[in-house]
Image (tube, rainbow, N blue to C red; front, side, top):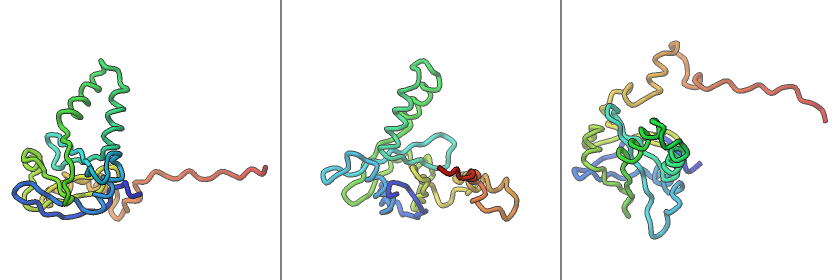
Length: 171
């Protein structure tokens, strides 16, 4: 499962937008990049949508899968047109440098209010980047969902129930 993003990492960002990608996140990016190798560093796709307090980061494999899903939609479908606008206008392709850093463009740093420090937060096949000063409810769906649950509930309560095995049939 080295291709999943796990954990939360606080990372410094310098004035030029350079930030070191945490090692586990770097390994996941590399594992999901078919062109990664000795001559080519891993790629990350970074998306931002107005009104979101975070950046959403995707692997090459994740971006390819979404692109294929969009291509399978009817060319005249308004949802396809909206998704094409999002995927091709609002997502930046960045490559890690030889010291495992990315340089976040100024417009992305400004959009997510990133200055001095940032958080890399795992989301399985994706990860988010946000300011440590961002309100928790703005960056965490978990915080939003748990606020609607009874006090003392565990996040594990959000899991769907497992199907119970039926009676075994002798062969």
